[in-house]
Image 1 (cartoon, rainbow, N blue to C red):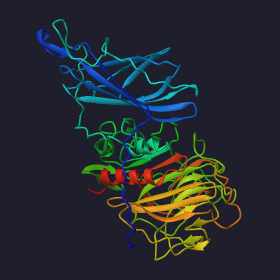
Image 2 (image 1 turned 90 degrees about the horizontal axis):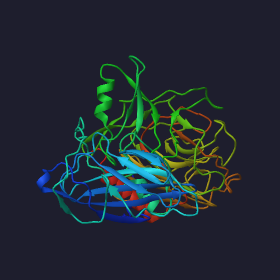
Image 3 (image 1 turned 90 degrees about the vertical axis):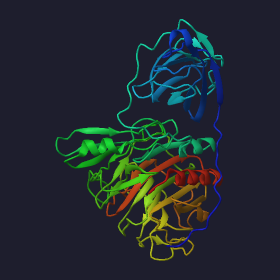
Image 4 (image 1 turned 180 degrees about the horizontal axis):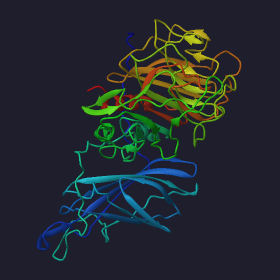
Length: 482
């Protein structure tokens, strides 16, 4: 294994549009003669794009312990919630009400809980709400004592398994803070946003054809692998859907046929790639020859010569020389439509169109009709063999500029393997990206490859080195294999 040059990782901790409000709330769960109440609310816009935005909301309980909560506020410019996780919501006009789910209603004194949502806005104004109420009482930041406070009428039940500690920041929060938000975020191992509490993927068991969505142990946390273990006990399961955490609905399902091979493609064995993150069991996506996932009708993915960034975590020991173990941007027709119609991360040992030094595997860019390891077609000596057990692979591109980066996903920083002009072959400048998403296959459904995928994202815009260094630091902190 070639040791990559290490770069210092710089953590990004800012988020766009942060506001905190506090105040008195109806005390719940304490004796009436000694109940105290108080709370603070932070509302942070995590990402924003044309007609849409994401936000994270954290509630801190300053008073007596509570066993149920409802947070209300009003939007000031016609915004609407389109998707919410870690809570249940209703909206009537500008008025929004969010209530706890069964597992997050209890908040101890000084404790907090969080939820997140995606929303729509009118592209002219997206002001942050400044007034919140908890359980019907306006928040002002103080703690009060109330003799008339009553216990919650709807206590919540404890979750069936101990939740993991949610992340304070995920890779997509870092990309959003850097001005290049995720437009697709896929992982079967963990949440890629700090506030994401939805489903990561779906499995189907062979015994009766039933399906189950696998979520996270807590918002921003690790996959609930125990739920899969229980559901699949005594039978076999395949991964049927890998959900997009960005809220844009760019979910991956089995790929249809294309110019190189028929379809639909095989689905991954749900238990073939066991792993762990900081001691938490999880499963990756094990791609054997014939397996592949795709979404040909996407939202927000770069087209034409527009800028984008991509990263993925792969198993550096599970590779082959088949075409083509890719994750990223591909044709929407499932056919080879010419040079420059793809921009995906490739990882493997094939040498037909391009390769680097050593025996491989190499991180390269699949731009259609070429796997590029640098500006030249074929061999580029500066693209090294990278075979860490957990490998971070990055490809990004913009107008006549693209880059490859790689790293050990368990430690250290990123190394730039190429950064420069588009390939010196006709058809790649400008690019002609079409905006489909593929995993484990080529753009024309070539499906002779092998590999394992754990997580990956696609962004809008060309991420900065600082942002990518922070993402790599976050990946290391996730603790793959520990």
